[in-house]
Amino acid sequence: MNFKHTFIVFVDNFSVTYKQLLYRIIIAAVSGIVLYFGLSPFIRTLMPELNRLLENVHDFIISLLNGNLDSMANFRKEIIAGYEAILHLFSVKTTAFVLSGLLLLLVYVIATWFAAIGNYAAACVINDKMSLRAKSPFFSTLIKNLKAACVYSAIYVPLSIVYDLLIGVGMFFLIFSLFTSFLPLLVCIFLFALVMVISVAVKMTFTADFLPVLIRGKAKYGAALKYTFSRKNKNTFNVLSNFLVIGLIIMGLNVAALICTLGVGLLITVPASFLILISFEFVNYYDREEIKYFIDKNTIVKPAKERALTREEFFRGEDD
Image (cartoon, rainbow, N blue to C red; front, side):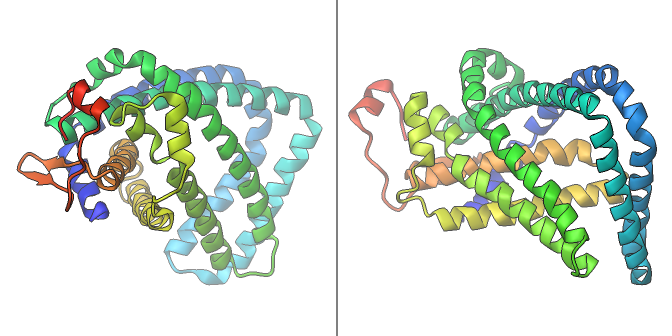
């Protein structure tokens, strides 16, 4: 039922997608301008080899979509050669590579910081709709909760980036290992996609409760962290399996948007992906904590046995 309710809640809050889109476009535009001027010298040096690699990858994808499997071996050799040429260039231009990497990391951290603030505001809007049927404006909610969102970002973003960097390094070497292995190319692609989806699902499973327990549970940050990483009575495998399925659906939607709409559809599917994940986090939290909630204006989901309010919740005026 969590899976079904997640998509009903997402549709009920779909208008937030457009606010998220505008917010993320601003972040992407500012980040792009900074990176363009900061990385231009290094990119000009890298561009010939990078173009060669991207052309080979492009031709490979086209051949794969057309069912031309006979040329897969040649594409594998070309892609490996381009990959090794880029690695050699990195070894020659080590200083420029390190400085560019540091700038890229700094911009990524700042952009992720602001994106997390946007996710916090979106989560507040979704929670208001689920608990009270209140239609909270996205940008007003963002400003109202800016301090709390900044603290949330200060805790979540470093943890997320450390995990993403470890996974990114692992995936970088996994690509090279798979493409130089004896395995068929389609098997390599399957294994790469599988590892990527599982790594994201694991991350989401162990951080899924952070936003709900902060916003709906009104917990302090230390208590929220402790609650988030505690897996007692949380059906971890069930949550992980749901994130795996949702992750595959999101991947399919974004790939379809990229191919079928020449990338235009990503303007909707990318911000919508974050809203789907946030919706699942709150549905999962409400159901586990036995709190009744709205999934749309006509439907209230009630637990089989409603949880009694604690003394603190009663005096805070909460009505589950």
